[in-house]
Image (cartoon, rainbow, N blue to C red):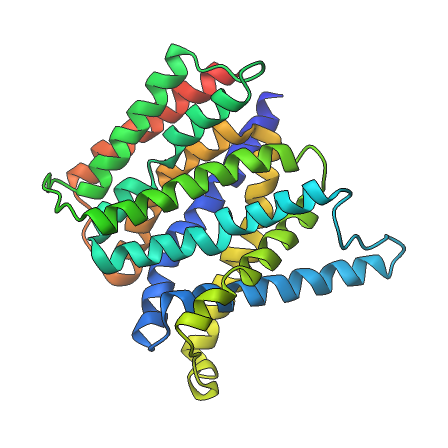
Length: 302
């Protein structure tokens, strides 16, 4: 059992590590003139098409292809997952950085495990309980995340609009974790993930009615753009969403979501590796707090 849980935690860590690296690849696409919403749309299109093709291939080998949920209520659940884990989350997070700093956005968005913990405990009062050790561990990890993000510069520039949008993104991911707990009890990981991509794309369409426009083929066929989009679509979206939804099924939403605290760590490591940014003592202190906090949370779950 202990070895199995360790395996699930390794998968969760690798997933978050890839998501932390997306900052670098997204930055390269932004430099190429592609907007944040267009990047989201393109990566979800790639992920959805590939996942759909894979399922169609599997269905041709004797497995029945499931297109719709068993009940209308479950289909609406998938719509909610597509919004909270796709269109609304990415739109709120990317829009937040137009009004506030990246530091503020990271601090607020990466605090979602705390909100997810209280939200899940409130909805599943009979089965999910927050112990003092678990709460202390999550708070310690949250403080560590703040230390990593602030990096010794303990000054925040408040922006009501931007900070509120970042908070919306934070709540979206917390709600996504809550809804995944319910969906994972009824449907397969690959089916849920395909639905998330589909409804994420469907619900982003109104944005293009307000702000029309899409990158030209000349831009999209550039080698550097194609490589970055394929990484974001295949690895960071299709594979990572599949793994993350699977990890939530195995570890539980409360424990799995705590790995979001590691996102700033992996972002800084990739920025150091690819963009030559410096790693400071504050990074080491914050990382130690996050690891200790995660250990306390996992210790309580055994």
